Amino acid sequence: MAVSPRDFSVASEPLARADSLDFLRALGVLGILLINLYSFALPADMRASPLLLSAPSALDSFFWYFLSLFVDGKCIAVLSVCFGASMEYFARRHEQLEWQGRRLWWLAVIGSLHGYLLWSGDILFTYAVMGWMAWLWRGFGHRRLLLLAVILISTQSFMLLIFELLPDSFRQEWAIYATPDEVAQEITYYQQSWSEQFSERANEFFWLQTMVVINGWPNLGLMLIGILMARQGWFSIGINRALFNWLLGVTLVPGLGLVILSLVIGWHNDFAATYVYVSGAAVHLLGDSLMAIGYVLIGVRCCTANALSLLRWLLMPVGSMAMSLYILQTLVCTFIFSGFGAGLFAQFSLSQLILFALIFWLVQIFLAHCWLRYFYFGPLEYLWRWLAYRESIRWRRC
Image (cartoon, rainbow, N blue to C red; front, side, top):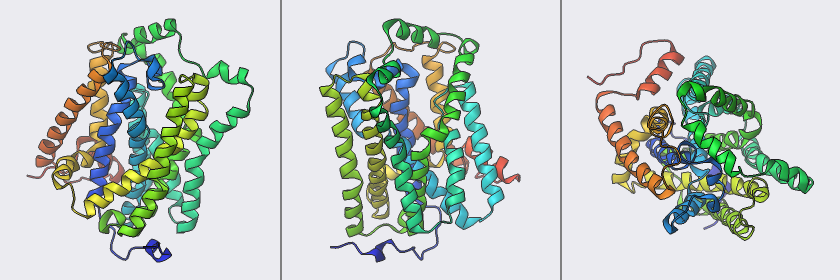
């Protein structure tokens, strides 16, 4: 069946909070743990190349390729789409710029505290900054938003490809892997106390904050995609089959092809840093964004078609308190792997970390169900609302 422009018209149904958003947030926040474990528990370069894994088993190598192909970069992109959609729902309920401004301001504060005090890999600050831009542009028409989204999603990939035009000597100076001595220093750093790590962590996060204006554009583009999808009512009333199939054909399929291409070329080049961190990253990043949009479409389709009911029942409470569980992941992982906890950084293989993640998933699902049995919001979700609205909010269910 051909896709008609009529399929993209604004949905007439009211935009209430959609259960599909909680389901997708849950998938995003659980999946992001798998990738963040590279930062929490392993030397940084191991995420870039399977050849840098320490004495890898066949299972370790399999998991590296699996994560790179289906998870790495996709979960954070899915959360970006959900963040944009949630802003559209918020606007339909409130239409108060002051409230949204305070929400984003306090999200930036929470993200900054997370980054400076616990872990420099925080994403909440980026969401707050790019979310403010998305909020300002929310009133644009469909075509303008879509055009902006396409440009923004492609911007960072285009910038990386420009580096390919520079002399090889330039790229070889900064696109490099850590030496064995530098890896040893990294391991020593993560085995230090909290106060000894603070200076380096603060420097890293401050640099990441300043780089948001360069690295955050794909997140902003995906937020605009989320706004457009919410406008259509896809998160609440679904998407027709013909349009769904067509959109998968222009997002998930080419996105997967790009990611596979980047890995195949990387394998043929022995995952050289000058490829992985430049043209390889450009192709992979664009593929990640397209695959994430495809993932969102599949999640929406499953929810609105009432498929995977048991899985949705299990995961939706996780999505309802995604921020609290995201910070909980940092608290638990820094305690286990950093020097101010058990100090087990670089002590586990990738396959062992995957097993840890699966167990931690079950714990988070259990905690979310127990918490929401007695409370309406997660603890950080409540704090965020209380700070933004400046009024008492009913929290307990009984």
